[in-house]
Image 1 (cartoon, rainbow, N blue to C red):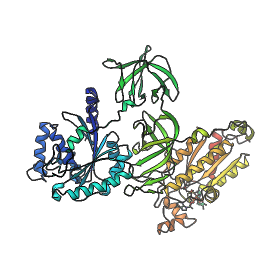
Image 2 (image 1 turned 90 degrees about the vertical axis):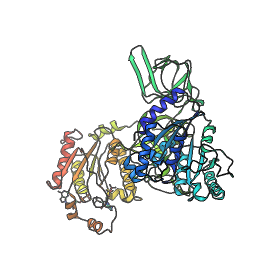
Image 3 (image 1 turned 135 degrees about the horizontal axis):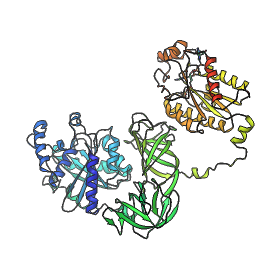
Image 4 (image 1 turned 180 degrees about the horizontal axis):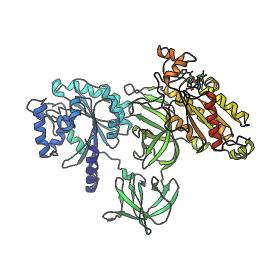
Length: 634
Ligand SMILES: Nc1ncnc2c1ncn2[C@@H]1O[C@H](COP(=O)(O)OS(=O)(=O)O)[C@@H](OP(=O)(O)O)[C@H]1O
Ligand SMILES: Nc1ncnc2c1ncn2[C@@H]1O[C@H](COP(=O)(O)OP(=O)(O)O)[C@@H](O)[C@H]1O
């Protein structure tokens, strides 16, 4: 279902008409709560259905018909056939409808527990959430989970739609008890604005007009409420934020900065400050396809020209001069994880924030949230659907606003560096001042001075391979040979690292990531000290080998794959660990029940089946000579 494409068109249309009078809402419910029926009815009552859709629906209803002769509105929204067969909807579907009083965009998200991602996506643009509850079931885990997620993305207005009231004989008592339970839970989330409505979406009671079957209910029908609820909080009331998507330079006389305004409004003559440079200027023109504008506001895509020729590139943010965004590279953030592979603290990811994509990593979660009890729990990683708070470090400073003051400027997505998939989403709380308080000491005896004194360049010889592949054996010979050549060396291996620096770490994925990160940092310091550092660790993940590579200068990292087939290392099994692992007595053993990711392009590939440890060591020393790191005559 190409919901997004459709959404873009609708949005453009709505903005073109006028922003006023638009309500964006999201509907959340568990499977079978009647959510699709509810939306189908709303669309129907507001006459937003096209005739051909209705005709198709009638055909479908007869085919799948679960509601006797009545039209089954759920079929209209359940999208693709495959999804329909699974009985769950797996994407966000944006629909729009118009009544005399208002325009509506409704994000319909699936009720299935796995699809947190869709929920967050749908909710992040909504002003209000309709939370559906089946009157027979009351509040479910899902109800709490969805409410937590909508509160997380900043929604403060909730409609509690107590549905299927016909199946509990229109019981006022049932309705009021569910309402009471819900208000108590919502209060814990800081949500006070809850309007509870007794409904039968299937029969249309209290949907667009009050129902005679609930004489005890004096409130509005759902549609009446949606048409009149005050959503306040106009995006255009905040300070100007315009992330530059591209610099429009058709000829030497014109330079415009194009992007979508994510906060505030702008007029020619306004003073602006551009981040991260901090340069200031004044808006000259607001250029659009249909001519210049006297004013543009949040949500509009425009091109600005400035009175000064200052350097601005893609990803920079044009801000109100008197109230600019913040600038930082470390934050506390809420993170929602959406991938099967957990978030591993210290692992390098990409983060996309506004129009900028940067290298990023997360610290260990400060806590994860149990969405049922709202308890804070300790955790070392963040699993699929997990929600937690952690520190985020970016590889350079970016312009941002806390999510609480600007949803667009304060939210980001996390991308896996290798698969390019979105693996998480997050909200910025605040910048950590720490990054600004740690200053690099200017040192007088620098790396160049040490290189001159040592008579050779520093580097990292990073040996990677299975346990028993021969890393330590080869590394020891290399160190001996280099020492004989007069080089200053240091060998980092399990003996001196796992008993000291990393003695708190075991062999889970998260611990290995941290182990290798620490070794990378130590190797970086030693390279700065001018040494030839030799490391002999399994280092099974390419992400962290890449991380260690990135910590030193280009050319200083020499990855050496000590390639010995699993069958052979199992045969060697010097410490009897493979046998233990095969017997299930040792968990997470590399090659057995923990992965080893083979290097794709190592600087050196040693096949130990084809050469002795001495030959492998000589191949390494030869490479250093060829690269000019060290001279034989030294
Ligand atoms: N579960 C499990 N998996 C792998 N290895 C294990 C495990 N438990 C203990 N050992 C012993 O620890 C050595 C590997 O430690 P490393 O620090 O090189 O591992 S890692 O790079 O952090 O993955 C490794 O030593 P080497 O044989 O020198 O590689 C093993 O002897
Ligand atoms: N061609 C070879 N290269 C390296 N090691 C070999 C080779 N052939 C046999 N071995 C033996 O394999 C074992 C490798 O163990 P080790 O060096 O501790 O591996 P690692 O450090 O990778 O765990 C040693 O006992 C070594 O003598």
